Image (cartoon, rainbow, N blue to C red; front, side, top):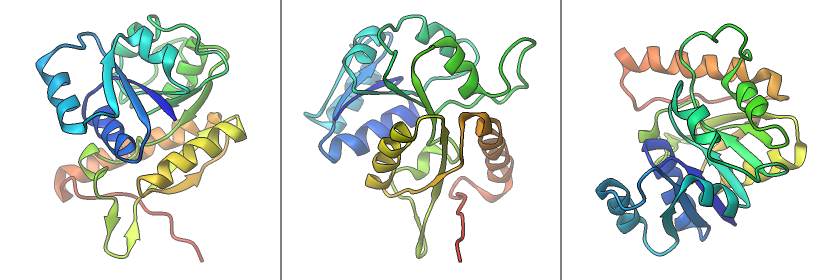
Length: 205
């Protein structure tokens, strides 16, 4: 699969490396594709990844991952994209501050409003990036909770999550994204005194 990743920081870079290792073709959409940081990431990943403009990465990806910071970067980056209508757009962002007046209840719903026609799926946002390369905790693998309104889009994201070791939990429609974003806030608070080697797990019986 061709995956466009908007952002090459801790989340985007780690996800891109993991998926490239599993044979996916990764294009990082960044402000400066030739920066030392981006080139070091590409050297580490190898031949299945390259860097380009945000517009090119979004246009070429069969699936597009948004992995940049709120509040300024998300609108700025999305404004550089076109052709996302009908594509799966995976929202990995975390809006830690309360929603601004007039904005949607969650970051994911705000993104869906900014990019009408995209199949937005909230995913891969409820644990620290340091855990992505090793999702196993004892005998259990960390859960990632996803939500979205398109079942087929969620099925694709579920497969990508399972490929890298996540226990993927479907948490329902995109209207539930604010609940998932609250999990991220809890993770941050817990990590301040428990450390970053922690993750959430849904137990089933």
